[in-house]
Image (tube, rainbow, N blue to C red; front, side, top):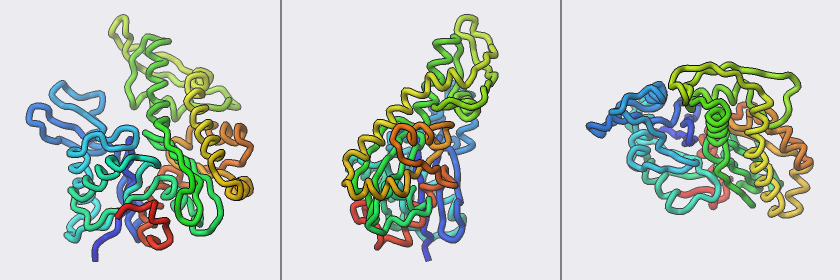
Length: 332
């Protein structure tokens, strides 16, 4: 019997869920390539270790950008590698359910399907990220009742009002975890004339990042390269600086949530007001993003228990409930 695998194919990481096993893979969506021979050296964690430390003959890339495939060939090879890693010695091709951002184009959908088929899938299904996130968070989306889900990933924030197994209205914006990292890198470069890498920016974001005032002041010391001297330098950053630079992008997410709510039928808005808003994805763990949305919209906000894995779990579970899902959410 072939295995069913749900895959959260994200800009920053790939997370896979297998029926009866739970989360079976969690790796960075990173590939390293030997530019001389044009061959792949490493995938996932092994490739991620080279990021920022690679010599000129090795290129470290993310084959997905803003939630969609930017390099089809590399993505296909990466998927094939990870599927083989999950299946081990099993030879039967798996059924795959892969999540996609809301509102992506037919061409972008086809790229995902082609990549999965090239990787050896028996059958490929696509599901919108907010729908998968809702299932993964344990929400019963089969009933005629409105549920508002915000999934903040690495490349996109996807917002959807879900009822009877599918999205009634949805929005996808290219502002998410990576944008926050970029904002930190640019700020440190401009203010302190210091260059830091993606990993350092993410460490800063996790440690002191915020989009709502913290109750206690937080600081962090980080090392980078001084642009004037070219030498290593240590600088101190605080949460007040982070609030100033991260808030503008967070406000754009709030505006997208407002816009989605405005498009939804009044009956579903009433349901959402009673039940509250659900947040998933790694970006939902940024300090204060839930408080900011709750205060701006006037509806209670809840962060899912396993926010980072929600989409992958929901993607896997969706394979058991194909009949309950709106066919518009799937692509067979």
